[in-house]
Length: 330
Ligand SMILES: Nc1ncnc2c1ncn2[C@@H]1O[C@H](COP(=O)(O)OP(=O)(O)OP(=O)(O)O)[C@@H](O)[C@H]1O
Ligand SMILES: [Mg+2]
Image 1: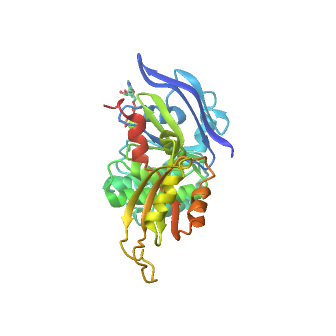
Image 2: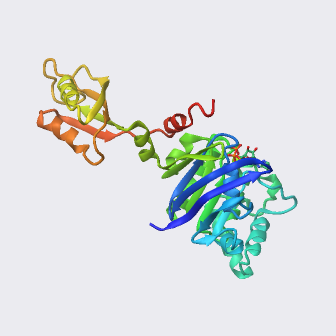
Image 3: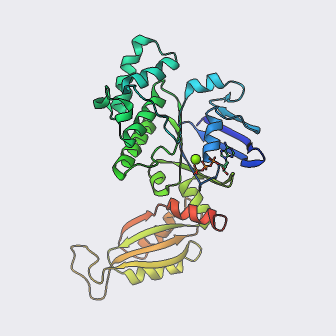
C-alpha cells in the first residue's frame, strides 16, 4: 500500500496557543481515517493545514508525495475539502453552484454538465438541480457541499464533520455516501466526535486531544493493544459447564471467562436435550499470541464440546476513546 497522506512533526500555533503539537500520521491510499477528538482537540486545524488553507508553524505535510506548503496548487487539484461550516450563497441554483466550482477547477465547459449530473446523482440531489441553494434543507446543503468537493474527482477527501447537525436519516445518508466513495477508491480523512458513526466506515482512527495525537491505527489493533487482549464469543450446543472448565484450564491463552447466555435446555439445537447438558454462549478474553486463537477452538473440539459459534467481538470505538482520553478530558 502506498502512503497517500504523510504528516511529519506538524505544529500549529495561534498567537502563542499551540493548537497542534508534534503530529505524525500516515494515511494509506484507500484508507478511511476517522479523526476523532473532543472540542478544541485540533481536528479542524489539522484538516485545514492538509487542505493548504493554513500554513503550519513547523513540520511538513505531503499529499500523494507533494509538499502542501511548497506546492499548494498541485495539492488542491487532488484534494476535496469540505469545511465544517457551509458558506451561504444567495440567488444561485444548485447546478450553478456546482458549475462555479467546476469552472474554478478549470474543467472545460463541455465536460461540466456531465460531471454535475454525476455528482448530483451520487449525492442524491438530482431532483434539486434547479432549486436555489438557500431553499435546501441543512442536510441537502451538506450533501451539496460534499458534491462540490467531488467535481474535480479528487483522490483525497478531507471532510470536517460532514454529518454535524443532521437528523438521523440524513446522517445515515451521509454515511452511505462515504461508503460509496470508499468503494470508489478514494482516500478519506473525516473528523467527528460521534464515535459509533465512525466505527462503521472507518478502517483506521486517529484520536487527538489538546493538539496531540493520543493513538492511531486500526480500531481492532488499538483496542487490542490497550486491553492486551481481545474478546471471543463462543457458542456451544451442550456441555456449557464442560466448555467453561476447558476454557478456564487454558490459562496461557484465556483470561476471564463469562457465561453470557445459559440455555438451560437443549442449546437451541433440534436434538433432544440430554439430562443435565445445557448449551449457551461464553465471552472469553483471549490473551494469547495473535494468530493462535485457533488453539482455543482446538482444545474445545478435542474435549468433545459441540461448538456452534466462535468469533472475535468487534471492539467498540467508544470503549477505545474513553480509555485513551480518560482523565485528560475530565
Ligand atoms: N483562528 C484561530 N485563532 C486562535 N485560536 C484558534 C483558532 N482556530 C482554532 N483555535 C484554537 O485551536 C485549538 C484547536 O481548535 P480546532 O478548531 O482545530 O479544534 P477541533 O478539534 O476542530 O474542535 P471542534 O470539535 O470544536 O471542531 C482550540 O483551542 C481553538 O480555540
Ligand atoms: Mg472542528
